[in-house]
Amino acid sequence: MGSILIRNIRILYQTDDGTRTLVRGKEMQSVPFIENAWLLLDKGLIQAYGPMSTCPERADEMIDATDRLVLPAFCDSHTHLVFAKSREEEFVMRIKGRSYEEIAASGGGILNSARRLQETDASALLDSALQRLEEIRSFGTGAVEIKSGYGLSLESELKILRVVKELKEQSNLLIRATFLGAHAIPIAYKQNREAYIRLVTDEMIPAVAAEGLADYCDVFCEQGFFTPEETDRILEAGWKYQLKPRIHANQLAVSGGVQAGVRNHAVSVDHLENITEAEINCLLDSNTLPTALPSCSFFLNLPYAPGRAMIDAGLPLVLASDYNPGSTPSGNIPFLLSLACIKMRLTPEEAINAVTVNGAAAMEWSDRIGSIAPGKEARVIITRPMERIDYLPYAFGGRHIERTILPS
Image (cartoon, rainbow, N blue to C red; front, side, top):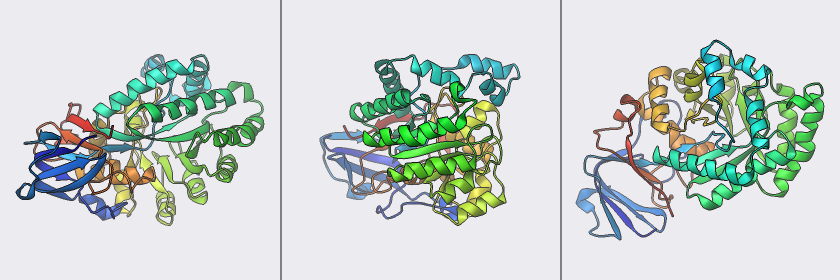
């Protein structure tokens, strides 16, 4: 990209010198900013910023941001963005009273997506995933984590992760890849779950590592899916191949997933709709990041993760979309901000921190993204006219992002 100078910015948010890599507890109440500012991007990097009184005179592209806000692009650290088909029929089933667990037990849910994915070729998966990446870019996302988990066989899990590898080459979003072979027990293994766990640990993980297809290894440590003990085994196998742990934890019940995550030095534990003081204290004694997924709670009509309590306890809360076909068919981060403020009682500043600087930390990219700092990548959002960031969650459902700038 050539040089881009954004002038007359009403407020430039999340400005720092690059040393602020995580905010926790009371620190989340504040987002640094400069009013009436300029921002210079060049060679794919943030070069400088300051008040308009010091603004450079020219660049290859000049953008007038009068009455607009500029922020770092959102960092969405939990998605299942590569999938074959939507699942609106299950949406109707839930409307008629069937629970998430009942749908899963009858062959719906994750197993439904796995069956459809196994029948879909890689080129079709790639095309649909590229469309979803463009969709989330329009909502302001500049970096995203994408999990496998809708394959549940060696061949299909590799197919998903190879598609993610191709997405990295074709898209200008930053992408992290996560292996989630332990998403559910396939129907063929219902009477022999031990055999499936061995397939994950002894065949899938080595194959994924051999092709360099994933950064992380994830497990759905949940009631009716994988136990904490099984989770330990799978994550230990991942560590042998330098696949760092992430965990789906405590979505449907207090599952022991948080403790399993901390015990295995997980980068993050995600969902957390059901946690107690014991889980909060466990996280406080660790480097594992708590990640809440409020769009999932909204769509499934589940309790929301106690984000207010976690921040008040001093934790560095992360927010992510959980974009997937079954429980969150949306990657709309501005709407997620509204949910976090309305349903979880976060302030706008706390919610913004959770999807920028803390979201970057949850993808271990604090040195590259998450704030407006010289030397970080030129991934920024220009909003439509508004007075301050409070308007983003306040005016829920609106199209607030005018432009997302990413390195070409």
